[in-house]
Length: 178
Image (cartoon, rainbow, N blue to C red):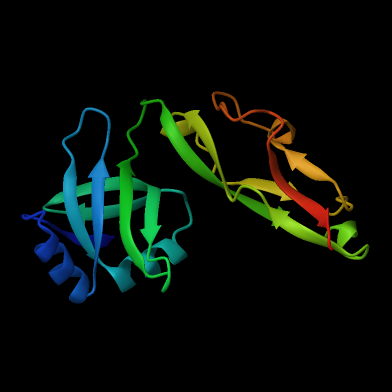
C-alpha cells in the first residue's frame, strides 16, 4: 500500500518545498467525497504504478485507506519529471469515466513494407462502473499493413461499458514512412 501525507497548505512556496524534498503533489477526489490534497514520495509512487497488476491501487492518506485510479498526470516539459497527479477514488456502483490502457500483441505486416507503427491513443476513455472496468484493451496487430488502422468501433467492449469517442477515431495504425 502506498503511504502519503495530507498537505495542509496550498501555497506555491509549500508546494516547491515538498517537491524539493522528493514528494509528488496529488489530488484525490470522488463523487460525493471531499477532495484530499496529498503528497507521495515520487519514487514510491512510480514503483507502485510499475508493479500494480490492476488499473486501481491502494493508498493510505491521513488514516484513510482508498482504492484509487490515475485520472491525469502532469510532467515537466523539458525534464519529463512527474510534477502532479490526479487520483480518482474507485467507488463501487458509481458510473464514471475511466481511461483504459491499450496493449498490443504481434508485429504488423506493414513494418516490412516500410511502414511505421503509430499509437494514436494509448488510453481509451470509457464510462462504466468499477466492477465492469476492463483492465486493458488487448489488440492483435499482426494483420495491419501500411495504411491500416484499428478504430474505436473495432474494440470489443464488455457489457455495461461504453466508449463515447467517435467510432471512426483510430487507436493504432501503420503509416507510410516518408
